[in-house]
Length: 309
Length: 150
Image (cartoon, rainbow over all chains, first blue to last red; front, side):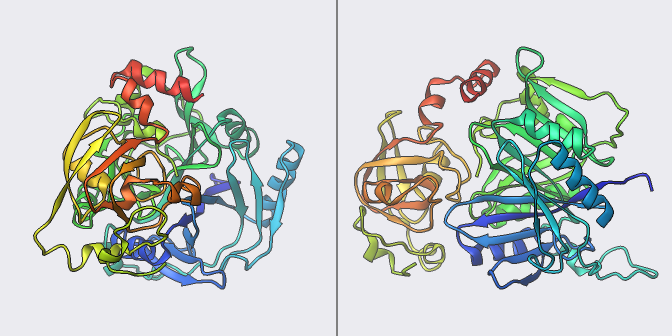
């Protein structure tokens, strides 16, 4: 098995200002599959092609934003090892008992220097994608309901100490740098895209004036055509769009940034290239951020660096 | 959250009332829209905004940039305004991280979460407001923006 250790993003937990409106949004407009509610009132969702029980959890709150972002690791032994590695690196961790989140095993939770809570876990119930494990068909009706991303793909998180957050992911969790935006001094990173797989990013960080801020949670679509279909569905449903449809220069992904009903930004995207850990990172000097963000229009979108929840 | 018809929420400040989003979209959409004049003190812009959509959406569709456009869902605060005069209705929740009770009582609200009821004068007071007004839209501007944040 070539991909070991941290496998992939597993779930995000978001705060919403009106739970039922955002349940409708995530289920009917974004087209995630609603997977249940727990005794805390949290609502669980997954992309139609995901096999684990959930990848998005939302809860009612009086402020928007992200509670936590979690990664699945390749087994309980890895979970224990990574917790030890984090502690040795000076990162405090705590264990959240199995079952606190529906159908999910024990989680290791820790706060990184840019104010975000990150979790690792090894076990979540395999509920399947509905297509079975023998002679599966390629898709089903859920693949066409709403925007219908196949999966939750990554998140971009904002906070002051980007360097401290990056170091934990690179030095302890085994991520590698794929792309970066650097300031005029040629070295201070304004944003970084990190991978634990062959995706261009499994998590990204941007330097932001406040800690613990959500920039966006991203959902994967299979084609650019489906990104355009997503744009139609957003407009039909009066979803506030931030940027796109366009192509990012950074990661080459085709993208739309938009907002849920509580002002949490999300992305629907497709494409990009396959990254490997031995590849030289790609660098975007800050004065090329406009095309790094919006390659088609090559114009600055101020909201990229100023609008967070 | 009390679910009251719009007419009952016309007194703007400190009324503690909110109506729901569905109230806005059902029923009124088919009626002949009514308009009020909105003056943005910072930029000196004037717009004729509908009373059945958010103040921010009305300004945005007219291309008025005096109030910055962010998430449009009550979550980010860049469109925060102080209502200097006039009546409005709050129709959906705003993040308490950015709008507290005192803000609500004193007319500091998110433009994406209120509808104008009468002619309004507003002043943009969001984090982006003054900075954007002073920042040109070039790459240099972007760099300056980041430098200020760091």
